[in-house]
Structures are given as C-alpha cells and as structure tokens.
Image (cartoon, rainbow, N blue to C red):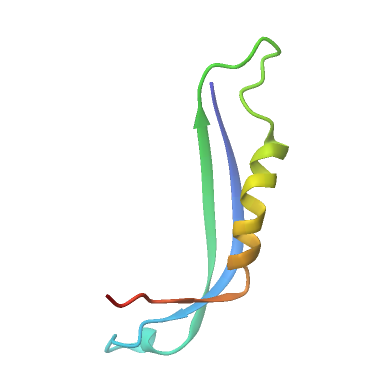
Length: 73
C-alpha cells in the first residue's frame, strides 16, 4: 500500500552570484509530496495522516513566507 500527502508553502530567495534576474529577491510557491509505502496494520492503516501532518507542520511553518538563503561553502 502507498499513501501520499502534499504540503504547500510560499517562500522567497535570491541567488546573489547569478548573472540574471534570480540575483534579486523573489518568491516561489513550493510543494512537497510525502509518499509512504508499507504494509498496513490489522486495521488496514499504514500511517495516520494526522501523524504525518503533526510531524511536518513545524518544518512547513518555518519555511512558509520565509526567505530561504543560498548557502555558500
């Protein structure tokens, strides 16, 4: 069995070393699909969607309407 849940958020970023328009601060709509595959339990449940949401919501909340910064190493 496979299940999937999609999360969406808005974020801004810039690529300071880019020669084009991406060097300027701009935003995007982002989406992430989490897919889980496995054997369901005796009740026919693989994982509760509420558990997926509880685990990932803090991460999505941190990214939503945030500025994502390019990491230069």
